[in-house]
Image (cartoon, rainbow, N blue to C red; front, side):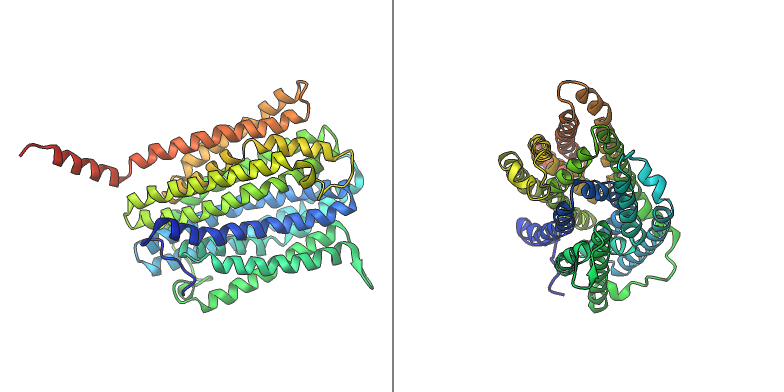
Length: 462
């Protein structure tokens, strides 16, 4: 299919950006799902935003669960395709989809039947906020299977060098979500609006349509998916390979989200309005990190295929090309958040007394955007090399440090702003550490040893 990009040959910048740009746009489209929900829910009021924020934390947590199947499948499919073994790549793809379906059923059951204690964790004060949060959680996570399939299929297609199909599928879902949101939240004609529940239903319906579009594309594919047998038994050896790669990434995501949930509970101590600020501010900030995460997916596949093919010099050049692009993007996002915070936040929250809190959030987080972009891009590259455990250790240690740091800083005159500074400081540290970690790992690649031997041979006397 001409939608697929050859990652093993040709100009690195052209190959990488050709794969990355549709992924980045896809990430922006996925971000627009949440921003669309937030924009419409904002008209209902900050209590509704707080409810979506609390319930949405478990949607975020769910991505940590599916990361095992997504990352394991994407990396192993890329390695297999890099070696030219399409049959084995299809086996890994089948296993990833099977794991995803199982995880979706289990996670959906836990969140649906355990909604009350799960939302109770945040210690929200308003009864209506608590009820709406439970409703949002039951709908979005109870039917998480569509989201899981979309995430895994996107990862597999990216490993194949096809980033355009996920873009098309997600764009169709976004358009549907934009149409359904106001209709289901506020109602139209005889159809009565259901507020927060309507936003949840709109999101799930849009995700289901995206899944259908993916299945149509899979049926037409002749590179990999025509060989995928979703319900045939996959050997334990193949599953074990994916678990080895995906488990650290999954744990990293789960711990990262769990830390964010603990911090959300901590923020609740400043009032339910502070939770709304955290939710909206995080969604706005996602214009930076979701785009970087999309570029990270591209460099993951690029590194994975070239590593599988033994083209180690191309691995390094691809990484530094990606870092350069993402650092510039991070600087742009920083300028946007620091320069126009009131205009941006005012699009989502309309209470005059809440906007100043949101402005301070955006300005403080604006200082770390370029470092966060470097962090996420490097995680993608290191994961493509199979170094997911290293990524998890760095991420878990320094993300965990946000909790004591937030407690210390918020107890000073900074107050709630101290929590936001804890986010920024930890992101700066992680960005620097990840960059130097890749430098260390890349020096140990076989290509460097080969070059060293050649140089040593040239220096020998005749």
